[in-house]
Image 1 (cartoon, one colour):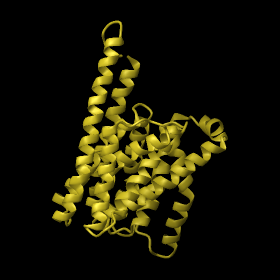
Image 2 (tube, rainbow, N blue to C red):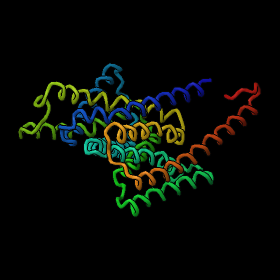
Image 3 (spheres, rainbow, N blue to C red):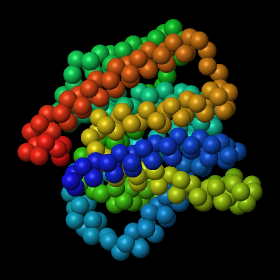
Image 4 (tube, rainbow, N blue to C red):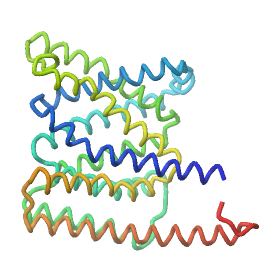
Length: 309
């Protein structure tokens, strides 16, 4: 069936996006000599160039006249622009400052944030075990704050900014490519002005450090926009709760990179906090798997041919 094919393609798209994102710290580490805010400027400018080029090839600009006539829709996507810009900057800064493990915590928490926002805004319903999982995750955050002695602000800021971004993109009427074009376009002017200012003061890195750095900065648009395009497309094909479950791929890859590749400090006390949150995620995942199997069984029984559609 078409719907089943759309669901499967959505799964493939979101998994590809998370794997791509999981490898991005290697990319940002390779240009960590460039200040994070300057990297953000290049991400925005080159992403906009990449996406506008794609739009020119497609020759479809009708969405500007139709969808963006609604002031509410414009405000929604201005909000997503600010959220994604903030998320990009904080992520690059955290990675290049030696906080890859904490970024992984942010994206471990994000699935629960997505589900919580789904309940709060979209009126989705949670079962008892799912509420228990969210409560346990909150306990894990409190443990790290008061016992480990450090409020995980990077993790929470990343988790909530990307969770709210995903929610707004899901309820927005613009398609994946059009929405991303608008978001990068909204950030393009301030980002370009900032880069020009750096150049005028002799502080810019582009074409001044090495050919390799210049090339990587130029490709930062593709590295940024491509996985986001995959992610935004998947949001329209699968439920927000499914997106939350599959996102475990990303933080797991980040955790492995931070602890085993870049050798970031990871004490026993901090491990306990992570374990508490992992327990919450396991409970939530098991509940979701059982529910999905039960739902498919009911659908199969209701189908005249006995086949899930």
